[in-house]
Image (cartoon, rainbow, N blue to C red):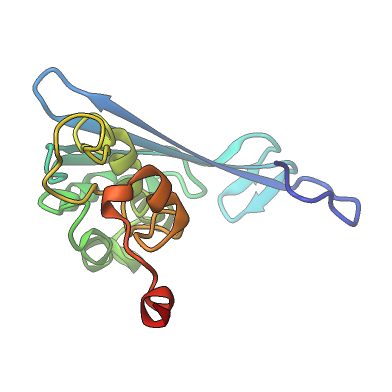
Length: 193
């Protein structure tokens, strides 16, 4: 379903694109490659000079290598296009500070402690913040079991994705339909029965 039709004429001025790709490696680890670009439709006057329309203001890459428990074992960043060449593009090696963090446990706070403000690049650090959910999506059904155990062996623990979003709350209709073994009655219904 598309967004509603705009109520006024519009002119595209800026496009930010983020792409995340996850790779299973032969050694059992996973690489998560994140890429962000910012492109303007007009020439941009910067202190460092003119950036022509259609040329990236930012073209940044971040790669983390994780194990199956979501621990970061290697990390690095590169900057192919930046507003201040020779300055912005020197921070890449600092993203090795992500090593040791776990994407599932305290990751975003850890990133802020290690790379916020002048300790990192605003755009690379912002890009890092989307890595946990991208890794979970990559792992879903391959590393993390997302089935409910109803059609085949009995799964001893609640599937990972339950109670992590509005649609898959255990007192909701989607869980009652697709994961009935894990469904609970909403509190309001329990009190009235």
